[in-house]
Image (cartoon, rainbow, N blue to C red):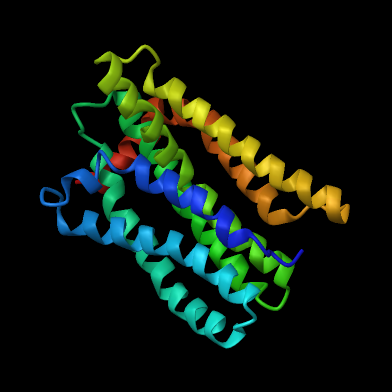
Length: 233
């Protein structure tokens, strides 16, 4: 698979990420602190990189592709570092239930771990282009659950008022199902064309299902709550 149209398909997760965080970030640029700007801008730049890189590869501009990839390593580090600064914001948020405060913190940690794993494995497989490319594509899916959940929930509140007819926990489950289904389609396309299943996509599905099935439990787990409070303090 030569990824001839990947740059076009990657516009979709970019749109979901941008629109999902519009109400909590882009519409409040003058109000948010510096560390939130750092995360918002580096994450946005990463999604743009996921559009640019396959386009450069398709144009056979491999030299620039590698140069951008090297810069991308530092950009990915910025995404992870800034995300870790954002994670504690859930704790003590009066707009969230206790389960959501600590459950969302669990999701954030798992997303950071999954994203980091995809980037590291992509670099380790840089000479195996089909695997490398799929690890890079898979990195986009780790952050889609928070973005897609907001994209569903916030417009619903604006339309129906608060509380929304569907709880935020239910919206998270819907987002998880949508993400797993989307990755499942990619797996099916690979299997149809190559009779092969690639690990990068399996990693996303396994990780997403894991934190999706455990985040409510973790939101009530005393040991996790104590750990989160120690970080917050």
